[in-house]
Image (tube, rainbow, N blue to C red):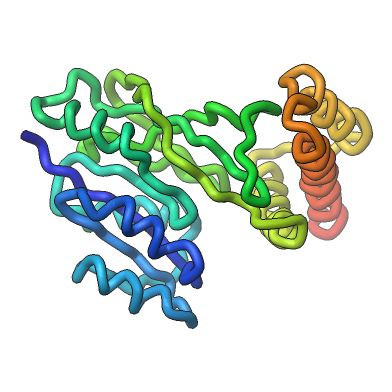
Length: 250
């Protein structure tokens, strides 16, 4: 049977980290890389594992790759502090690892929650990403934000999802919007992308209609409406910041 390491990166996550660790304590090993939290995050983590490491923030992809490199097993599952394993997902993973898996990695769906409400539409579900993989055959690609695992071999899909408790409220979303939009703007600038008038006008409107109408966010009611509006604003903000970078640096 293949053994599994669950890998988590964290910074000031004392409100979330215990539930994440509770859901992961079935694993053979838990690795936590903490970016020198100033709250009780590290102390909580040490209740669940003695493999808690302190590392200066490198960026999302680099930090996760560093954490994966500390794993004692070849098979890893990368879990965020605001995510949780479900019983069905645990059973499925255990079944896969009873023998050498057919695939080198597996996409896992997330059931996202906004302000405590599960969101099924608007493009928020199933929200697949590679989380379970053989670390010898996959690596996090270099990106500023929205990091993902690049696999060398075949990749499958898990049938069961995990839970993601994202954005506790509007304030939480807007605070992270400022950070993520800046990272995305810098990434676009480094790739040679330039902001156009349509990026600042058409794209935000299209984002709203895509999420609320085409991807049926309307079925999530007021939550779907608020999410679509916030994502439209995020789209505008990242291109406005790209334009700002061009203006300041050119």
